[in-house]
Length: 124
Image (cartoon, rainbow, N blue to C red; front, side):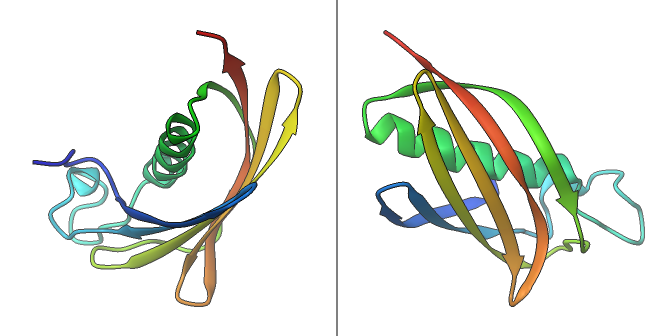
């Protein structure tokens, strides 16, 4: 059984420094517990977690380990509700020991969240 907290459904395409992924927001997701009774709204941290998961999964496929260490300019523009389908677009830029990621999460044609993450490459 998959992780009940994960919203990431699949990584559908990668091309160089670009990742396209899909997310599902099940009505019974534990993210909605207490957030908010009678008016469920997905917490923003759940969206950030889906982006992080996509980045780390793709890095592992490339034989790279990353440690995410910063978030910047994260914006939440529209609420995400039970049953919503999400598309996640991530672009990366390699800068030596660090990798910078910009992301955008869409619900249909509407941006629900965007921001930047930075990760350090781990030599192992």
